[in-house]
Length: 380
Image (cartoon, rainbow, N blue to C red; front, side, top):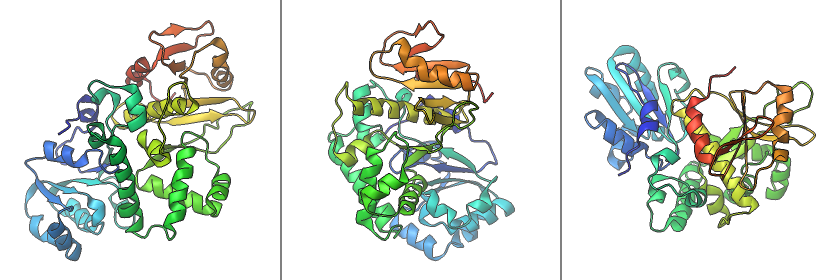
């Protein structure tokens, strides 16, 4: 059993009388976390077949059984019976009960009463294990196989990841009837894997997949709603240079593009460089969820082709690079600095020591970059 140390603990400071929704993709460790930290609480596990059918048929049983008591009720995989949210809403308003819910699909929850619970449930996100949570961290292994807990300690991660992707298609997509054409969605996943870390072109991907551009856009929304990936929005607050507005897409775990494309990474290749960027973007997203002062993430690309991989809180610009780093590599950062005043200009790479270039750009080892994420100031 994996115990999540400091980083996640910091984000889950539960207070008496508060209600929580713990969101995260399949197999990131939500159930293990709840069993460990709420062992003494009343728990309803909707993955148990008899429990599921009982509450699906009669959601009102939740109110009838627990309304008169006190304390916290844990409900695991709440998206399996979204109608329970109506009962939970009533109990939050009218009883002394508090709730800790877990879920792996925002799409299903939005169909019913989740929007009515806004402000009553504190939303907490769980992601795969981070660098700080993994003993004997191996960068190359991380880029290839990611950090889902069961995969991290698997004897056969390649096959287990294939099963994970098949499980997603079968249980999240096919069984729910989310898409009418499963083969076209499968082709889209391959296209999304190829475009991972890149700007999204709905038209180009539609052409590759043989569907309409609006269908590709809907498919991306499905991925976001089922917590399988993130959009990184473009930074557009520039004055002199016109900014590209298309977002970038990142799967929630480094392994997914490799698994979907049946790809083995090799150092000193473009794919390895993209995977390195992917890993560090995901670590930054984790820091944002787990209690840092990071609140805004963007990338920037000008119409003339200058590009900065990441802008944090609109004042820290970051480039990721696995090759040798030279003064000419700072040009995108210095160009962006002409548009907005930057507190920090960093190039993050595989070097072992921090160094400062003559124009003030810092070259950081990736480990140093991760250590600085929790020190970044709020939005300027």
